[in-house]
Length: 177
Image (cartoon, rainbow, N blue to C red; front, side):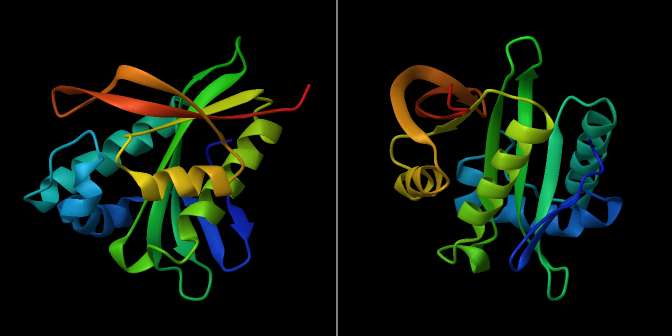
């Protein structure tokens, strides 16, 4: 499961590797990307290296499925998609994503999220995926709906980002009964 490589059109979703630290450093240093992430912006490469190590450990323990979204043409990373907080008994999980600044508004997030979601519902035998986005993150709302998610309710204080509770909108994708 943790080694699955997913492909669609011009994109590949591959497991993270130790060599992805420079890409993570660049992304977590980007103010727009960092705005919606749990960790504060990175200021040194060691933080990105530690993040890659945490990702690899979580994947090895099958607590998450983290994928780098990369271009097929040259293998360059352009984003990330993560499946986490899954509950095998309830057949549900959460999913999240982000894209590099140079890849935004090009369909990368939608294609990556769609591919990862379909794979998770099928390969992991999940019935439901949930995605959370801040109310002001209209771009993310569009990605979720284009990937087949249905907009749900407002969850007051639904996530904590850098020590602050924030409201989020819940988006849901489920297997039709």
